[in-house]
Length: 97
Image 1: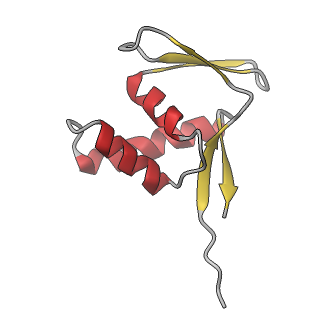
Image 2: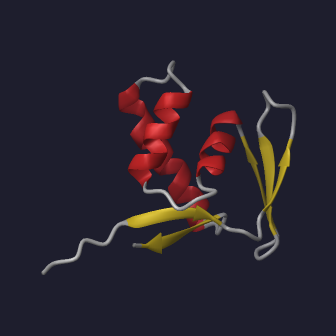
């Protein structure tokens, strides 16, 4: 029997979130690397979706529900790019299930 393993994304629990003006986005601080990231409102929304382990497809679905004005064909690429960048810098991690 073949078991399919899916990758789930989960935010780093050590990262500190400081929300700015609700229309402006937020600051993230990773004490493990001493890095600060400024994220816009969409990045904040994606970050918040990673409070529980989710697949990239689940995150994309949530973004499509939350931001109707974004063309659906653009959402997957943009979310993947954001998540990959956050993963590379340690702000998001992965779990396999």
